Amino acid sequence: MNLSPYRRWLGASVVLTLCATGSTALTRQSGAPRVFDRVLLLESTSETSASVSLGDIDGNRTLDVVLAKGRHWPLVDMIMRNDGAGHFTATPLTELPDRTYSAALADLDGDGDLDIVASNDNPDRKLVYRNDGAGHFTVSGTFGEATWNTRYVTVADLNGDARPDLIVANRSSNPAAPRPSYVCLNNGAGAFPSCAPLATQSATIIVARDLDGDGKADLFVPHRDGGQNLIFWNDGTGTFREAPMPVGPSVSQIRAAAAADINGDGTVDLVVGDEKRGLFVYLGAGSRAFDAPVALASSGGAPYSVAVADMNRDGRADIVVGRQEAVGSVLFNGGGARLPRFADTPWGDGKGSVYGVAIGDLDGDGWPDIAAARSEAPNGVWFSGPAMK
Image (cartoon, rainbow, N blue to C red; front, side, top):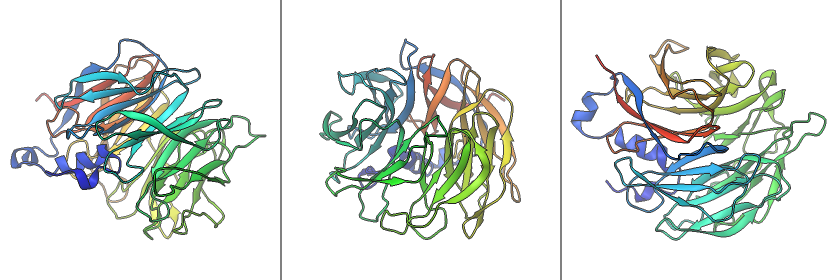
């Protein structure tokens, strides 16, 4: 199957979708119980990693792993090249350490390969890495200001020009000194010469998704440090002129969030991991409205990372949760009239804090696996396997 038309966006979810339409033998197993007992640690050290991204960086039709490292102090980001069977060769993204909180993959310049955007924290420059087509990267430019307390960068086409733009999440832990996040539009050649502020206060993640069904990517900005979550509505040009809409409680401390149609009703829902209160879903009610948050799981440690994917290939959106010093969860979606029923399957060893998870088929068996970026524990991959009967 030719994946080249799809590779400019986040390769993990695209490859996962395509694999889910594979052979008849695999299709017959869809919906079968899955477990995540087989683990491959990607490193032997326990450093301060912050996020993980998946994508085919070298054109060999396998998902590679990019580890963003350097929470609080500089480290070297790493690329793990996949041989297609879940065996990885480690190479540094660069020899220079920096404080990287996320490393997003996207085809920034339209040449058909995946480039990397690194959201480095103050005082480090925020960097754009250009791919030579074979998975070798060089710094091609910067974006924003080195002084920003940047935690995350999201890539999405905000103005409809078929080039991904950047949404930069900046944090302020001091409510008296809020910090705006920013939108940096692509100039068409993979550079970001100017950035416009968003009226946010403190964010460590921003979700880009069409939340009102008008075909334009809107922005869900969860509050990280005890304030109000906001939605910014896109006018189609990458400009957000309307006043942001409050959503959820007036006080949130959200580290992780995702947007997906969880209950299959055709509207987008929001899944959030609140550090103090737990895991919640805000069901979309249409017409730019969301129901009150409903708790999904309260046991275990604080939810530090969230991903949504069809983990057992039954056509429903499941939820993957990484936690602080606690075993993670795959919440298998059992369907339901409005709020789905979820069955909790554990994954992970409970060590360290899982700051990032990414989902994709990393060993070529057609089933989605879990890649985890951790602090105080080695980064690793938890492979999907059949549950014992």
